[in-house]
Image (cartoon, rainbow, N blue to C red; front, side, top):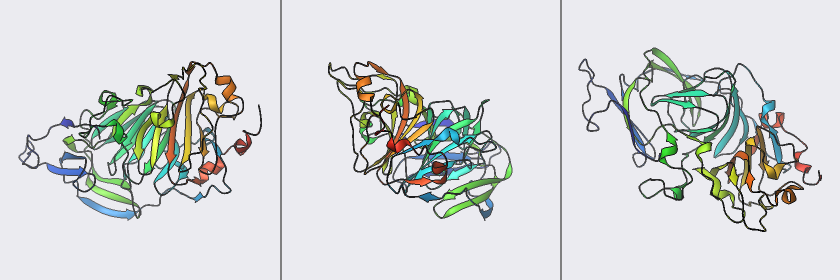
Amino acid sequence: MPYYRAVGEIPRKRHTQFRKPDGGLYSEELMGQEGFSSDSSLLYHQHPPTAILASEPFEPPPDTRVPNHPLKPRHLVTHKLEATGLDPVLGRQVLLANDDCRISYAVADRPSPLYRDAVGDECLYVEDGTARLESVFGVLDLNPGDYVIIPTSVIHRIVPTGDTPLRTLVVEATGHIGPPKRYLSAHGQFLEHSPYCERDIRGPNEPLLVDATEVEVIVRHRRGWSTLTYAHHPFDVVGWDGQLYPWAFSIYDFEPITGRIHQPPPVHQTFQGPNFVICSFVPRKVDYHPLAIPVPYNHHNVDSDEVLFYTGGNYEARRGAGIGQGSITLHPAGFTHGPQPGAVERAIGAEFFDELAVMIDTFRPLELGEAALRCEDTGYAWTWANRR
């Protein structure tokens, strides 16, 4: 996490006695990454966070996958996946996945159960709707355009709060997700060339206290899914401090980097994860060389599959291919892709692109989930050969 925060009541010195008003001790919990060698936070519970009463197997949502074979680019129309009666966690519909990450889409109209992902960090992008992320660290209010990073093993739930369904694109990692290292100093401060900084990041501001007993938490872990029953509600933290906590960042606060000629996707990078990156394409002025061609050139990223989620505006390079709000394209390694026919000529002389998209590049091939096959536009692969 980029910087230190302190919320609620904490003792002056860590690992020392911290007593309740009745004289009893609060229970201290250190939550940290990479053993004791990376970012961590200290949480102070009213009850022992270790007290469980039962553990039972939990049957997870189905997750069947097939290879992208025969190889071809894909267009997924996520808004065909309309659903009711689903929550933002168990209602996730897996679209693409490999051994490093799983990319899902969720349409939810009810709160999720209490949930802990013990496999890796999660990155949620809110396409539409509003929500509250409630966790042991407190509350984050989420709006359209927000990314939220939920660190590994944080107990939380997601509560839709608006009149319309909550639509989220979800990246579940097998490791940690954070800002690119090139944006940070040796001490973790955002550097001047970074397209966002600490002022743009939101974290929980006050504790969230819930008094309940025999509380179930669904846990996704490295050997399956389980339901743990806790003696007391996990939301009993009176204070915490550290650099590990859920945090939100709006895509509208991403400051685009532009140039005289077309800039490559690394200038749009927002996060990095294990063997993948996440980038943000936002409204921006485009190339100002007198002979510039603002749309991307044909390119073949030989080491990665490219996923683009179109979430606003008009993505100029894909015009004529049936791309709309909520579309996802997969351009796999082994396929050279680029602007649709006619896009290059149309873009010449453009000064501004009004587009909003989230890109995920993975460095291992992605397989297709059952939901991807249900919402695929099967004619997309041939649109470069069909001049429109």
